Length: 195
Image (tube, rainbow, N blue to C red; front, side, top):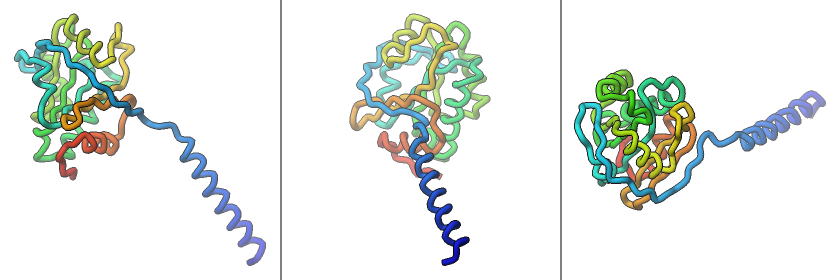
């Protein structure tokens, strides 16, 4: 082995070590914790102006996904909503089986018309519901999910997935990639094919 080949081999090994170190030092994109939340028995209003009992909506036999957003948000909410859109697209014909629920943190402004327009903008398919209600009821729901904030501008990237088989909620803090979101949804016991 000539000197050039040895230097090249040494550089290759060094690059592998450095890339492995850089990879292991990469911070997690999101954190995952498991909780036992008790959903408050409140009545909220969906994008069609219909009254919905939240406890019943969030207690189906299949996994249900919940996030807290608002219609005029330009930061975190579009990313969370793009995740819902991606999941529905990946599910294809099975998208209606996925229960996706967005709850407004700006009930003073998120009327059914605003919420309907928001869902239209994200090409929401059946199965994705956007809810609003009185400030008092919205605060109860945020508090129940340990997601209470006093100002919509300080909201956090939170997604919750309920696993009906195990009865707990998975709390995801951070912005998930489409692949990570699909994986978390599948781990919650969803029967999905993924395309």
